[in-house]
Length: 293
Image 1: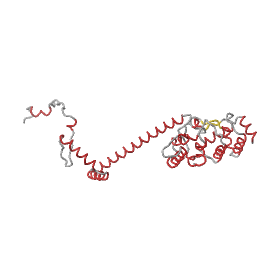
Image 2: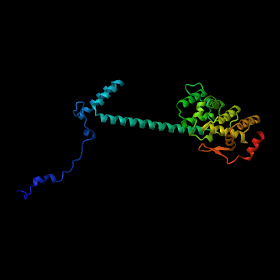
Image 3: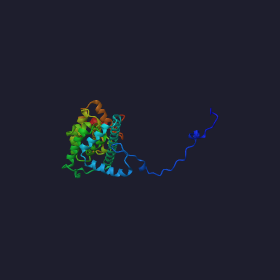
Image 4: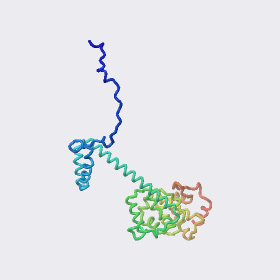
């Protein structure tokens, strides 16, 4: 019956809201904290409770901390607990990954620096807990065999002391005594060409290189041995003993035809650590071989 009558008080809910009042409270006052009984803790009591909690926590043993944490977890929703544990595991895995990446980056930078030096005096190097650098290097190779997993950066540090400009003992250790270390040297982060500027002229090592090639060795050792044998035989700048030259060439003559061809055509190891061969055997190399064999 009153459909034609406008009742203003019933339309108040459709009117505009009053203007918002400026917030004067601090973020601390907006925070709400509860005690273990579910009651709101007044702001004036929070600091005292936090200090008391920290004192209790610091007095607890690690075992007691774990027990209390387990008690709290048991009172929580299992789905929430699973979510929190997953987040914690993901955070831990991410932290480990980041730490590993940082370590690898630093090791690569150290390796780049040391490989750029013209000379490192290993004889004067003092390594804590080792009577000599040789003893440390031998132990370093043991660790590489056990935990190196053919890591290219690790391999780079193994290779540095084996340059021909350093003592023969380091090369003999790798090539004669530590065959497992030699076998695991598959790739490296350093440019092999920079480590092969000096040519091997030691008679024993030259026979070791030829024997390694005959055995079918691969990876970095194959490239190093191939470089030294070919350079020793065919590089005119290399001073060589005539009798040793004939001996090495005769050893090469006992290799497979395919390997002989590679030794005769070897040119260099490029910046990508790949072996580069000449298109054909140069005439001066053929003449040198024919005069001996």
